[in-house]
Image (cartoon, rainbow, N blue to C red; front, top):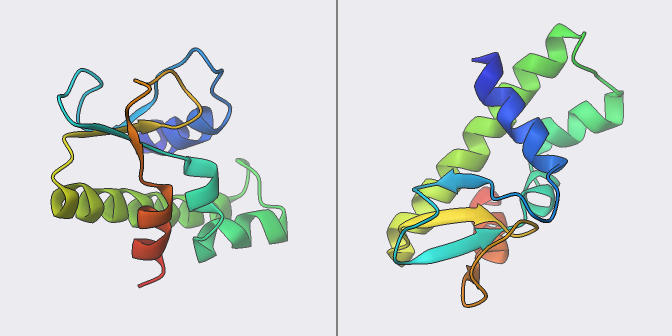
Amino acid sequence: MKALLLSFVLALSAQADDVRVYYGSADADSLATVDAREAFSHIAEYRTILREGYGPESPEYWILLERANRSFYAALDRVARRMHIDAIVEARGRARRDAEDLTSNVVAELSR
């Protein structure tokens, strides 16, 4: 489980050349992007991590990060299914230029 949670942490520090796939596979026909930093800034558990200054050495960090990840991936899944998107990758990475940015859709889904 920590490996899955760390995948988000690593994605936040992704270089511009990296491709971080959050949903589907990067070679899918209908590809969209999401700015994970922006999306996570709208998740209460992630904001608590930042506000309280929890780090990886704290059990609260892992509990809250797991909840934040579940919210993020559930929102991605709902948006992708509703919009018939096969894959969602990090907007800050290397993606096709014609890929639609779904960040606002994911943020809206997180706000429900």
